[in-house]
Amino acid sequence: MTTTAPQKLFTPPIALKHRVIMAPLIRTRSLGSIPNESWNYYHAPSIYTQEQIRAWKKVTDAVHKKGGYIFCQLWHVGRTTHPSNLQGLQPVAPSRSPRAMTIKDIKNTIDVYVHAAKPAIAAVFDGVELHVEERARFALDVVDAVIKVIGAERTGIRLSPFGFFQYTFTGDPVRDYGYVMVQLEKRRLAYPQKLATLIERAKARGVQNLEDELGIRPLWMYFISNPDLPERLKHKRELNMYVRDILWTRL
Image 1: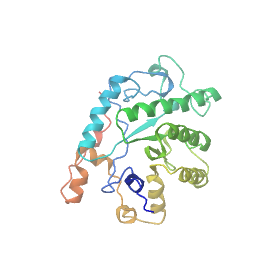
Image 2: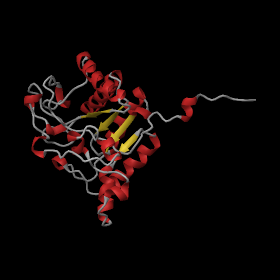
Image 3: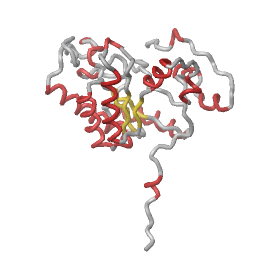
């Protein structure tokens, strides 16, 4: 008996043409962002209204027209926001400063990630990238909840074992993140973004040329001054130098 299997069984949902990937950037230049409880950040672009979905679709359409892929990073900013951005509400976070999250807060936050994932797909993003704290249970619960609504093949996650923004220290990054990575591997996500881990391991071995060692380069700032960066690298064209002082300028 001859069996004809659907072609999509053998076609990966996202087949990259190269290894030059632009990481998500916090640009905070969206004047249309509306403060909305504890997950908002001043001028960060949102994706929970029809108007915002329509605006994002212009972006995703432009990326797809060029043959690219784009994921929407979903993030809870915790204590890095301020009551003035939250209509007077206190930010919530894993610690007591400013206010520790309750069990109800945690469940609500997971629901917020799920709610945000749906309009991201409606805006024709190829998937979503989760940006959560390193504590395993919360991170894995968020991953599982998002997978249920959009699928593992559209879900990625960003981990920063050696990124200590706002004092997010962990006593043993190898132990803590190692456990998370093992658990994420079982879920077969679109990707786990762990560039920081690769870079730190390479540096620990005295590697100077990260491009040769890893086959990748941390070039996100060059994307700002070179929107056609992959083509320039491929054809060995000169790069426009970025101006660091204006990378994070707010409107």
